[in-house]
Image (cartoon, rainbow over all chains, first blue to last red; front, side, top):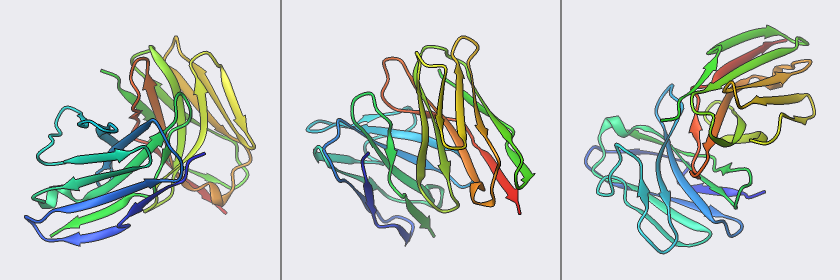
Length: 113
Length: 112
């Protein structure tokens, strides 16, 4: 199994600012993803983080708003840019190897004022 | 587009009761299905993974079944305990796609 850590675990930010969330996996993985969980809702995929190339975004999510980096097989970052209160959510990183179980990080709880 | 539905949305049972959580999906072309548990304010813990070729998986008091042709999965929890209280999420991985599509979850409360 993979152990995933995220930083920060939570933050309170002002409208118009940006926050970068880090995701670290304890082993090399082929797949890394970023999900959003809005209050009282289930998880929605933001994008697939591709190692060495641009992330693949889902409908409704754009690179300018959610730039993602993945410099190697164990690390990825998600930036939430020009934040508004609607961005208040839990942001979760997940990772998987091949066809196996996908594992999730503990999440980053973001509140935008 | 794959849609995943979970019923019921919330469930409250007395300790010791056996219970069944339901998950349905619209596109039967799935690669696998995964059940997760989420405690309040926490991330997701993987409970069981069922490959599309499998009918069920068991882990301790948990048993998950999959009927791909009818687009259904169930999670059976035997002899429920207060520590089982959490939100249970069903997630499907479509064939040819690596990310998961999640249901809205069932919020379970086991009363001592």
